[in-house]
Length: 329
Image 1 (spheres, rainbow, N blue to C red):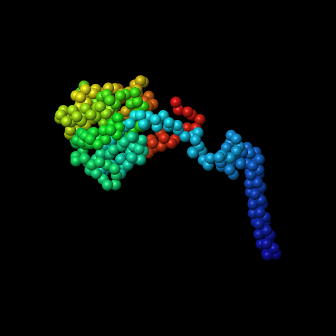
Image 2: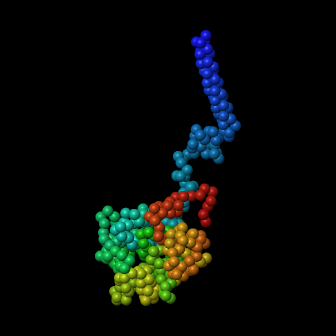
């Protein structure tokens, strides 16, 4: 009797287990039927054929969306402008930032220049940088700058029509720079940047970059440096350069767009959007240190104080990321 009792108990447990399994199987079957027959047919088919076009219910001829011709940016105008408005940009860098900031420039916006040069206090066989016989430090930025301008005038004056100096933590949108310069004559003395004012002296921020015409480059070297009229060493390089240009008859003007928004931005994008300005910016900015997206031109040319990682993000957003269904004008 004891044996029969134990056997009966085991049979009840086994029956309970089978009932549970049967119940789970039945529930799963019901769910499958609902998904298979109640859902849109083309959606379930999509799971089998990921390359099916939902609009036509036909298999796409291209393998992925990203290579579709209609999804690419049309850069015809930008390419034409690159041939018409030739720009040489030189980047002031240093041995300590060569592998981070300078490399980021070389990997992102740098190749869009007609000519790109890097200048540091010493050469490096692992990176295309030109070594100058100057000491590092803010007190010698003018020396680094003056030697770079002399080198460019001697070796690359015919490689471009416009010449721009930036720091290695600057990001430059070349297409917008060329667009800004396209109605200006490089054979005339021109000089542009983000306008500051200090003790009644207006000058351009060195960080956001300043650009000069070929004529201005000629005057700077053949008159300013040749006749020892312009400083060739010292701190406040951007202030000294503006004073030199004014002495050569090239004035500093306000370069905001027709809505008063900055083209050359001497801080990062988020700093201008949020208004995270250091005290000196409130003191120096001639436009009142405006904040938010309405302070940045839609055709902004440059941003400064970028982390080198941010340059890759900016570059991806500008030249790869697209918003489907929205056309930019």
